[in-house]
Length: 112
Image 1 (tube, helix red, strand yellow):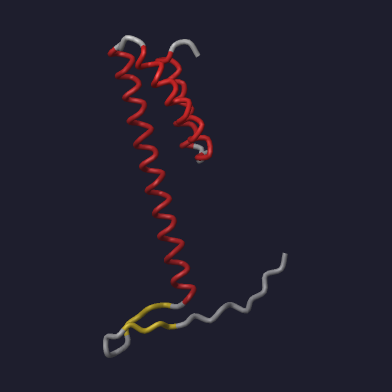
Image 2: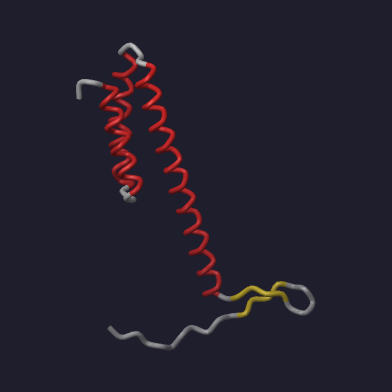
């Protein structure tokens, strides 16, 4: 790791790969390496072209992280909805009050 600009682009590519493959456990170590690389980058004279490329890659990764977080939130909402239906269906009775219709558990036994 001699050229911090090239190193940062490599780290950003690794970060993108981790996000796309759902390997979120890798992100913490990549972030630590990026922090060290950013420190080295600040010590050098700024090359505007290289900095623009780095910024572009960072923005792309930021968008990917945002999309991943949105997907996780949507999945959590779906799981919550499924659990809510499993526990009972909420409806309104004729007077307009919330009523819960309990659902019977399936007695079907699954065998391997």
